[in-house]
Image (cartoon, rainbow over all chains, first blue to last red; front, side, top):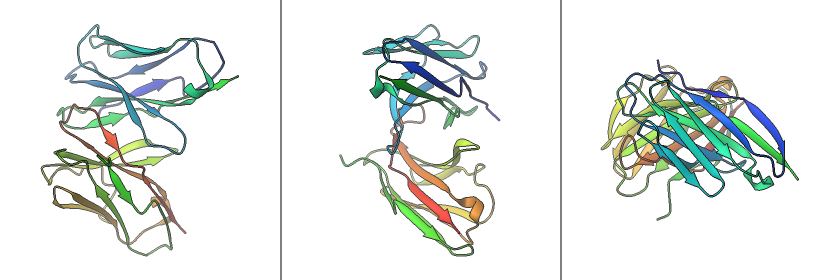
Length: 112
Length: 113
């Protein structure tokens, strides 16, 4: 059974702070790592799909890195804004490479 | 494209009743996934289909749960009989490939009394 772990479970920061979360996954039989953003009362939306060791992706103030050899990915948010408040999910493909298994997410709250 | 469409958005039923959740994936997406969201377990994969064929249903909690995909544009998740512990948000998602971006529906919130 593939376990995807995320930390911290929740995080509260002030507007303007930069922050980062961790996602860990089994490094064997790695296929892809996804990050999703899930706002309250909406459905999850993809942020990044990463496949290569050392990959770095960026979308505005949000970026992510990937280390497939040691089985972790970091998500960074620079200069957090209240609209960044959401749950951030990471997911890794299962052993067969056919379906995404999700972590429980990191819930970010940004105060103005 | 309208995105992934799920119905109903909310369902309240009594223990023992049959519940049917419906999903229309994005046209052209060959993969369809059913997930269940609970506070305790997060997003759990229940079952997924490739080209309408169930590939892995090992996540289905028990025999009370069943899922079908009779054609490329429609899938159902059925719970019979329903129990209070089935209360959760059920998401349907589709993608063009198993490693590709998942597109989620808005979810069906089920409450079993």
